[in-house]
Image (tube, rainbow, N blue to C red; front, side, top):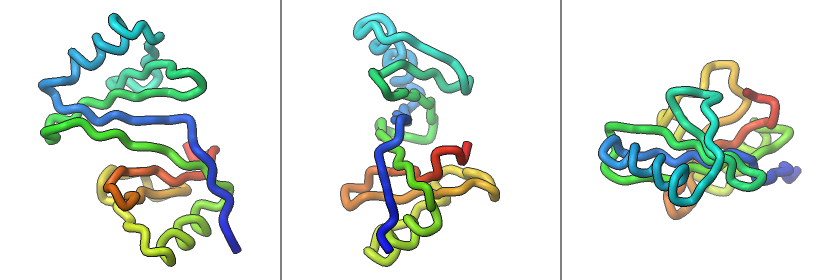
Length: 120
């Protein structure tokens, strides 16, 4: 069986503290994207049909972009990926015991959340 996987709507940018305020100002003041604060303290911006989340992370030395993938069967999709040698990285950020999904990395070490669309 091949799990159905599609692109999600959330893009997270994990940003070091020393770049966080300037990055917010860039998207708000320079680019002119509309901000929202549904999950404060993170700030988000409307990025077309997507949501760009800016998360401050004082432990990071450089920014990372994290992507989201949707699937109706997270356990099946994650098993399919594991069978293909995809690296799981669930310890990177806790999602909760009841969360239907998990974290993976692509071959270029870009983090992806694989989840059922209604998992949050």
